[in-house]
Length: 126
Image (cartoon, rainbow, N blue to C red; front, top):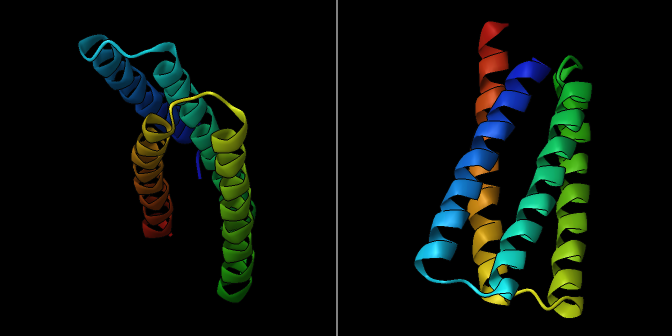
């Protein structure tokens, strides 16, 4: 897969997320806790998608059985670490919990769509 395409896609998604978050925060006069929640969820999800890209990049040219084993093991580890991060943030920070969960979910879905599109576009070329 092309790293340039990945980086451009992540930057576009982050730009849309940031502009949307800024728009909502201005429109609804978000408190500092809600704004912090937006930033934290953006950071966590971006780290998650970079890890996904690295795992995919490492495994994409392997045999199907090995690809599936490594890819899904990596996905399980990523989800476990994401769950630990979510629980830690909800427990130990003052970020608004509802805003954090909703923004985390929205950005996660956007990144997953991007990840699926990248993998499918790579597989179509082969």
